[in-house]
Image (cartoon, rainbow, N blue to C red):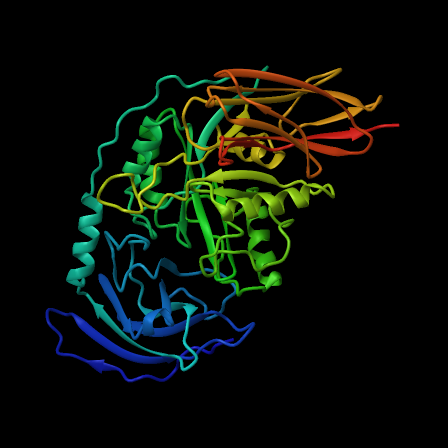
Length: 494
């Protein structure tokens, strides 16, 4: 593990109105395999400080060096065993941040500025072979103008979205009904360009019943979520974290205010990963693997199989070859009997407005979850049990899939059969004519039908000789995914 820097040059510039400026230059070596990917630089904060600003610069060498930024205050115990004193994380988005008693750069937590030894934490996303020299400037009792302007500009952002809540098509079944939402999105509190309010406005006006705000490695957004969420009576707002390691990402939803899942896990360090997942379990929450086959550096999963997770995001944003790869791997896990729920999320980082070229609407794709009521506990339980299907967007198309016999068994459920035969019923409502609906079991296509009417229903009785799963896909005429379900599981009894 990299050791803390204990020696550096400390330069005091002429104080102005009790302000002090510290400058440090530190050398960050390239981490060795299995070594910590986090590098701590201590600095002292005097008594009665009201604010501090931190800026850093280094030679990026055309992308060979990429250093993320975070901060711990004086409560940090100089060990990577807990998150005491954590004040925030901005990753590689910002080169200047501030923390004050009444406000802080997005991604950081405002509040008391305790005296003592604080730490800058650098996340070593990429470090060139020859290492990187980093210049750090810390201002006490002076807020850097660039950081303040950035904060105020982000805070003042407003967006106007159309209302589209017409024609929501929901089929209630018994005491359960389908709710739909998006479980993965980012705001200015990490690397996104949504405000919290714009995110909630868009979700509430565009057919979504729940929204997960999953910022990278911070809980700084919790306070604003708590303040705004009560204004949206028909929207379930989830405090989330995208636990972002350099060996893969996973989402956690429903965190208590101020709770953070430790992200300081080196690639392939499954023992350390287990500690973070154990933290999730202690909170009675679930862990969902994000974009496991994505090609962005550190996005794909380096911690072995997916069985540690309760769910996996096999559909991230617009459907593409990376999602096809995730779907293929998920189906391969289902074949030997492993049950892990498939979900989809937009991973939206910016509103769909002309200002942002990377803007994308929430609900592309949309995750549909069957539960008794729109509540966090019900949502997490339903996801864990597999009562989920995914559609390309939040429009009013609907997919129905169930097995009929002595009792009805729906998506995520299990049926036990005695005579080896079971009947499947499925319908596609308001999908485009010409699309194809496919019934898949144990990696094989059992039925493929073209949708010839806007509302189409199908039925198929199948002989089942061994335990199996059955799931549905809907693709358009050129093979692009429009919808897919989690399985119905069938167990044979002799």
